Length: 472
Image (tube, rainbow, N blue to C red; front, side):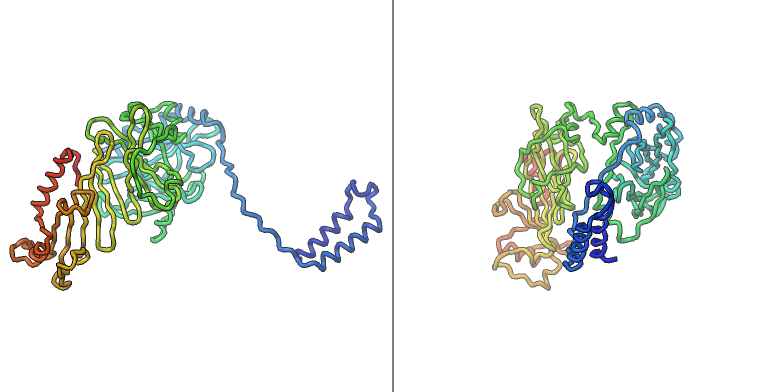
């Protein structure tokens, strides 16, 4: 039936059915019938109107707990003997390394679970068990046979976690090792489904994995000591206070309960990153200045920038929090890291054959100090020596160049040092060496490994870089 014909019939039906507001005796007058016929003819002759497209409504979040979370946490607390780590658990792996508990509702059915994960051995072995609350105030253990059947169980931990594919559907991965003695191996990826308190796994085909890593990561709040406070904190997915956080301000920042003011220059935000806000991906405590007073390093993701994350170094000063340093941890052409003692390493690509390294350190106030920058040319002919140096590409094809800048001003010639590498020979610093002679005749003095090391050591002493902190 066409939409137009349906419209005619519905119109007629509305006029001829018993609506008390039209006729108390359920009778239709001749005038009403005539009006009905005219309306039908007009509708038949009018062109069909295009239906308005209504925007798709996002499904409402109908998730709710089966009963109060306080009651469910009390059940978990009262049944600690069922889910606590035992000596038998520790005997599964030798040597035993560590463990953790977390509260979640992985299958989103309204009944909370306590997750127990422990690991051990030098080969990174894991074991996970899950216990869920019930209406009769008990705990039941999930069927984890799908995990147990694997040589290496998937790791569900604070760092690795699971990735949310859809609500109550996840991606996990296990490391398949070449031998029992090997530490690393190949990751095997699985879709993890939960049905009636039973986990099933479906291996993800090659080429699909990268798509799933773009999904949200399920964050667990891990604890070890049993208390209602810890159970509640884990249920709320808040961060636990570390003993290195002496005032609690760093923990408050992680939990979104305190703000940090930017107190440094940083010009590398792109595509509106500064306006998009951030989500905390990971964190660590670092000891800038090696003075025993810790700072917080928060690894954050820019919400509107895919695959870009930053490191914020946050310093508590006078009861307030300040972001004293920012570096890109990962992006398309750059990456960086900050060591546990505040040594800063940054790397960027200047093209297909140029790598740029930057080193510095953070002092006790988390203020940055430049150490040196180096440009590594994989092909020496990519460096602009000017017109005074003629390079035969065939002769120089296996020659590489490292340029060290000990000043932030790259035009400062007195603090710029050159070192070249010739692939295929260890005797490239002989007096009759064509590369050395050509460069130095043009005014580019070159230095050996030993000489470069001395120059950098002298530079470190000059700026007060503690040898224990240095990590280049």
